[in-house]
Length: 183
Image (cartoon, rainbow, N blue to C red; front, side):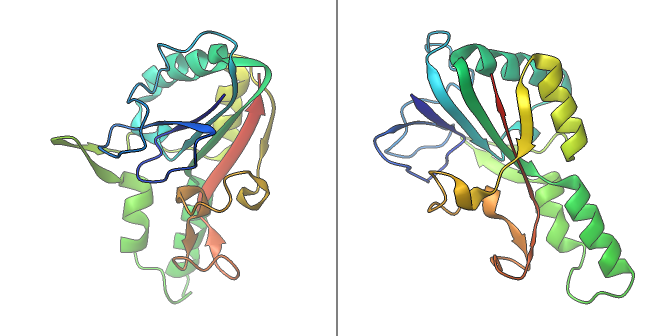
């Protein structure tokens, strides 16, 4: 079983279970906690740019639930805005590097998205060390960065492939922190 949590309009195909709060025909449900999924049944849980919408005091419960849904050896793959990359690009701009006004960073840092009848916003941000520490504290192992090009969902351009300049995947800077770990 493979889950794409927060998939939005991206349909990874029939081999995936699609979960999102939007209104898309390919969705299986909107339960990001996977309440109806039995423990130790998931091979892969993929969540691209969703956990930054969860308060830090609630994220442990969500990640612990996902860990319990994964089989032993199952993979959790997460993508979030990369605070370190964003700050570095902003600092380069402030030092005279042309092309990255503040407006390029507002979405990744403070993201606003329509969910049903309400707007939701990013509530936190992560760098690699803080996300790794969080995942290890929950009991995940082998926490490392992953390259979106080496995944079974590489053909789907989601936020794990966010670059500045926008869409410049060859010469731009990746502003998504892509991390995977193992139960």
